[in-house]
Length: 134
Image 1: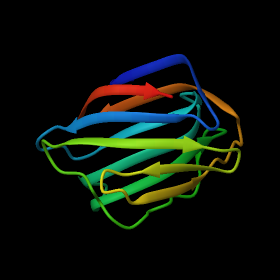
Image 2: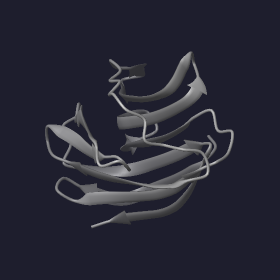
Image 3: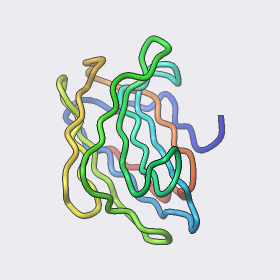
Image 4: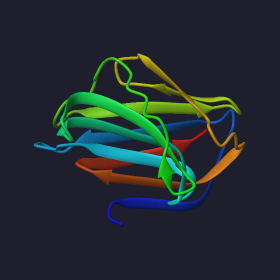
């Protein structure tokens, strides 16, 4: 597994995770995952510039029990090559709320329903500059 992995952290319901990064020039996509392990991902967010037949599309999903669940493809694509971005993620027992760089929101179900996650993974054409939980 390549990218940046953060393990044994504590991201609890009601807290806000702030991610700051820069999209690498010519990136096809990048992704970040939040869950309890690489095999159990509550949130997989994958901004796709040009890959898998998608252009300027954000794809959200979960990975549970060895299978991907149903994709969620919200409108909008507020990411640009070489530009810094910030994402703010909070979650409850029912959903993740992701505030994107243009202040639009994605509401994605917290399918496992956990109150705490301990695993994060960042991969693809992105340089992560900061991760903060408050």
